Length: 337
Ligand code: FES
Image (cartoon, rainbow, N blue to C red):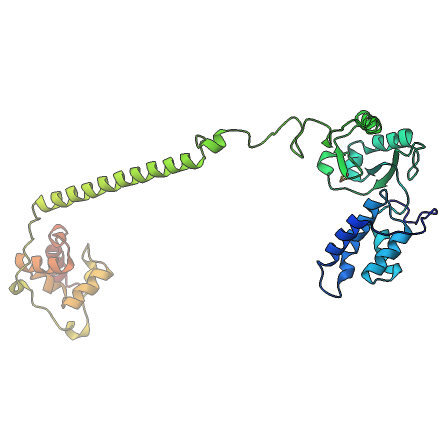
């Protein structure tokens, strides 16, 4: 950081020349009435440009008068920005960036070169060619380390290239501005490392938009084919079902085959029909709902009546297979209840 003090040796007066005066008036006119003070930074910049890259105190007072600002306000602004020089600088004024990214990339070597080639900070070489100042980040960290010399950036420096740069400037040789390597602007050193595959742009790459379109078309065609096959299979299945002979309807037992049923158990006590093998509590309940409470009812059923009850129970012949009639007759004979 520079010492923000005014130079001891100051010129008596300062006035903008015709060109800078015109520029100053144009700039002041850009702001609304009463807000002319907003033009202070460009006017300070014009004064520095006109006056060998530094601003004398007389210029600060002149600008304050132009903008109707107190001198102290102008001083506050001009001492805030390191871009404004308050004392004479060399013809080639080096602003050296010593902030972390530049420092990590070898800025200390550049600083050493500033000291060895130019001299102490804020001093001008005897021939008036150079002076230097350490400043904070100049926003070109990607190409660190770097310096600003007058209005130009010089980046990707090392000690040798920086010393050569100073020598070229002193000799009046046209220097390369920007990166001192083969990179373009802030592109990677040695050329681009990403987005360099041309198939990214010609559509031939898997995942490229043309490839994706083709995949969508293919998927749609396959889906349509599958749907057609499914519809065809459905038609075929329906035709097959229509051609299949209908199963013979099993004849329902005639209503007159229904055995004589009771509304309730005789003397209020039903036999324990669960004694018949094949009759559980559930079937016993159904039988009672039908009106069958006693062994002798079952023992009296003929074949047609067995078929009727079998149909009610949806037993498909189980009464015969389990021989309920014989079992019931036995319980009757033995007097079981
Ligand atoms: S740190 Fe040097 S330019 Fe940003």
